[in-house]
Structure formats: structure tokens, C-alpha cells
Image (cartoon, one colour):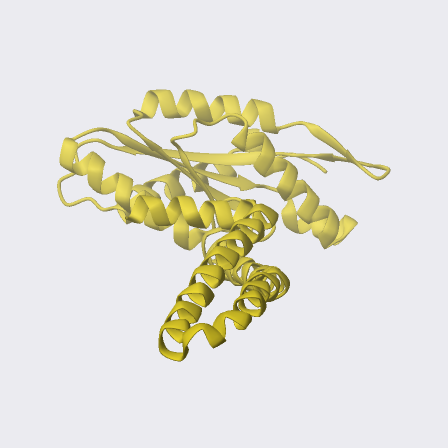
Length: 254
């Protein structure tokens, strides 16, 4: 029954005109059958004198639904589609970051907790990367926040192009992003971090300005879980990020 309902809802939302036609057709059939049934009863009770009303009844049973049903059906389906879209918008904003269109912090942590629980139960490795754009404040100050937003969007796109579909990627806070790698050991995660850093660190051209994208990355892994939690993994990646930020290798000029 649920499958039939899903198919019906999908058809209604994607084939509005066809749905209106089908509803109109069945409304005419149902109206015709109803009128004929009523007329038959009236004829039985009132006799052959009621025979003159057959033609009128048949005509009305065809005309009324033909006129009324398409209008009412279209209005109803349009309203249903609008309600569905309105219902989806809050859900989208609850899960995604408005600027970068990747997961927000809350949803990232929800998914990460789920993957961490699986890794802990199966004793599989799980790794995390903290990626931070080094110069966001300077870019915002020199070029304006709109340019800073464009840089973050480009940074997000570059990172997204270098991760697996099974990885969890979200905006943690400001210019800091969190990546969770289920089933990935530290050595592989570090290689991936280096790949991301190489791909991301480039000069992008915005208007007449050349802006260097430079990131610091902290990497951590938990394999022997014990009493460890997701927060333990995040704190470890955060500590490694701090070391990377303090390294002269990651200091660049805009």
C-alpha cells in the first residue's frame, strides 16, 4: 500500500496535467454512474413519467464534472506541490550550510556520530580531517565579505572534488571544514589530506584580483576505541590542525 501511495504521489507531483485529465475522466464516469443510479430509483418510484429527466440527468452528469473537476483538481494539485516545496525548504536549511551548500555543523555531527558508532562496533578505523582556510579575515578585510564568500565556495568545490561519495563533508564553523572518513586509516587519510592541500592551494581570479587559497589541515584517526567518542576524534584533529597552523610551511601572503 505504501509503495502504491509513493507511486501516486510521485505521479501527481511530476505529471500535473495528466493527473488532472485522469481525475476529470474518472469524475465524469463516477458522476454518470451516480446520476443513472438515482434516475433508475426515481423511475422505479415515480414511474415512466420520470423518463423525461434521463436526458437532463445524463447531460448534467457529463457537463458538471467536465467543467468543475479540472479547475478543482488543478488548484488542489498546485496547492499540494506548494505545500510539499514549503515543507522541503526547512528540512534543507536544517541539514545544509546556506553559503557552501554542503552539510552544516549539526548534520555533519549527526552523520559522523552514526559512522563512529558503526566503526566502534565493527572495530574499523575512522579518520577525520579539519581543514581551515588560513586567510579568510584578511580577504574579507581587503576585498570584502562577498569575495571572501566566493573563496569559501571555490574552496568547498575543490575539496568536494577530491573525496569519496561515502565521506562526510561539512562546514564546521566559519572557514573551518570537517571531513569524516569511515574505514580509512591514518596513513591513507594523511595522503588524501596532502592531495586535497595540493589541489586546493591555487590562485583564483575574482574580478581583477588574484587570491591565493591556502589551507591548514589537521588529521587524526581512532582505531583502538576504548572509551573514545566522536568528540575525542575531533579534538585530536583539532590539535593536529593547531600544529599545522603554527608551522611556517602553512604561512602564506595574500
